[in-house]
Structures are given as structure tokens and as C-alpha cells.
Image (cartoon, rainbow, N blue to C red; front, side, top):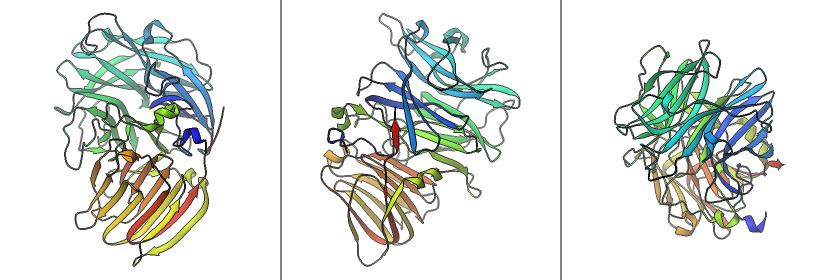
Length: 463
């Protein structure tokens, strides 16, 4: 481990230096998975927004190719904002929002900002075609604020569609739906919204699983409740049934993707095996705990491990499970035991996985290090992720979650140098957080369960 980068991840993707946020342009082309992301290469606190790029064939070995897009055009001079990829005829069509702020005394919400829908193409994620501006503010409905962004493109019933997140002048969040026959000329179809559900919807993603349509959004402005909407901003999805773009949208109950402290702006894509894969940003904009010690190391934020999405046949909700490729990172089995009468106490290193099953009894407690604890209370069917040491949590306090199935049957946990991802009941519920251990890492567990631990090796990253 680089002593100057105590917290740099082993198997999560972070920036080589600088700042990382939203995953962008996720796709697979000719066997290669492309993972673009919002990137400020020289500023760990964020700055000039570019796109960075990783590629991989197996999610074990990666190549970082550097900065793919920079804000160097008139239409994106104040930031290459988030967007997507659509693969056609051996090329990636990469759509994004070009951010422009006019000079002057503007609020940049209702005036003074351009949100330009931009396009480049690429066959390798390294070289890009000249930038094209496809839509400008005047091409969007007249009741919108200047906040329109994050295009996501898909093919449905022989026609191309694009969704974009937006904020109306009445401060209602919504998703805009456009259509096209050629990926360049777009016409507005309709707005999709849920009344009084946040003032802005970011990072929309409309996709189908098991014949059902789902709309993923990141709404801003939801009031916090005890067991939901606990972050400053949220990310989740609506089921839309067997929705057709010709029908009026019927948004069913909103389900959060993740109940931890650090998860936002996820994007999905379908790979060449037909799997729907989700990757999220392990961060949270405008959070009170946005002062990670990694800033002193010259970098900030990560992407989550890739998760495969599947629909639960019973509940109709989406399960998230780590991609099977993650099994290749298991380097050594550290222990496998029945924990019942005696608590488990183990000294650990950075980078391990826990498999916990046959959970019995009233409580299960996992102390990952002094300062951060996961607790399951069987009587209430709830889980809590709690920080008690300011140095470890850097402002994080507690997140609470009810289990769909009431009982915790299985738990799979990935612990990296400064992050924890917990998958409950085969991905029914997930909690993601950063944490910053101070001294040696001692794992403590108390309860009744079968526990197996594995040391995970670092992914290979080359330039």
C-alpha cells in the first residue's frame, strides 16, 4: 500500500488524482466494458468537469486512458456534465449535457444558464469525433427552469428515445421524454412526473427487466423520514408496469437503490450477455460530511462495485447483486465458522469479503472497526449503520433501513480501504458508506450465524 494514499481503494474505481463523481457512458462494445465518469483531474474538491475513462473486459483488470472529454467548446465551456452511451454499428454514441453559465448577476436556476445536449462518437473511448450540439434551451418545453441535464438514450419498438432530468419553473422535478429516428434530430414527446416529489430529478434511466419498465431517478428535495430519504438527495426507481411510450406514465411506489450514506447518480446498461448492470457514485453532493481525509491524499470519491439487476418474482422489486466476476478477487479464505456462543474477533487488513448466512437470534452486530457498527434487530426487522467516532465517519451518524422480508437471512459485505457495501438477503436491500479507519482494523461480530471471510486482492489497473 502506498503510505501516502492510506485510503486509496483496492477493488473500487477511484480517480488517479483529483475528483470523481457520476458514472457516465456505461456500455460494452466488442467485449470491452467502457466506464466513463465525471472527472476533475487536478482538483480533489471538484472543479472543471471533464469525462474520465476506464475500460475492462473482466472487471478484474482495468485500463485507465485518462481524460476523454474536456470543456473546450462554446456549448460546454463551463463543464462536460453527465450523459450516456448508445452502441450502434461498432461505435459509441455519447450524449452529455454541455453546461454554460453567462456572466452577470444570474441565479443560474431560472436564468443565466445553458443546458446544451451534446453528442460525440467513438470506437475506443480514447478518440472522439467533433462535438455536435443537438438541443438547446429553446428546444425544451417553455415551463422549465434552466436545469435540464443528464441524457440517457435507448431503443424501444424501433425508435430511439432519450430521457433527461429537469426542474420546472414551479420547482417540480420531472423527466423529459424525446424521440428520434436518427440519434441526431430529437422531438419532445412528454414529461413524466409525480406531483410534489422533489424539485429536481437528476440522472434518469428508463429500462426494461423481465418485461417490466422501470424509471430510475435521483430526486432532490424529498423530506427526510426515519427509515427513508435520509440523505440530502436520494436515488431510486419507480416500477412502470408494462409501460409503453404511447401511454400515459403511471409511476408506482418509489424504492431507494441504497440506504447508506454514500450512493448517488447510478446508471445502468445492458451488456453483451444481456445482463442489466448498475454502477453508482460512492459520494453524495452537498452532504454535511463532504470532507473526506482522502482530499489530503490528492483524490476524492469512488464508484461502487458493479451490480447485476434482477426482478424478484414474488415482490416485483429489483434485487442488486455483485457481478459474478467479483469472485475472481478472492485471494484466500481467512475463516469459515459457526458463530453462536462466542463472539468473533479477527484482525483484518484492507480488502475483504464476508458471507454471513443461517442468521438466528434477536440481534446480529458487526463492528468493522472502532467507530462504525452494523446492527440487525430481528424483533423489528430493521438494520442500522452507525458511526460513533468522528474520525472514522467524518460527519456520518446513522442510517436506518427496514427489510422487505422482515428477517435478515443472508448478508454479503465488501470492505475496501475506505468503503463498505452491504447486500442484505441476496440484494433485496443495500447500504453503502465510506469509512476511514484510524488504527489497526479489528472485526468484531456477535450473534448466531455462519460466517466466512475472504481476503480480496486489488484489481489490476494500467495506463
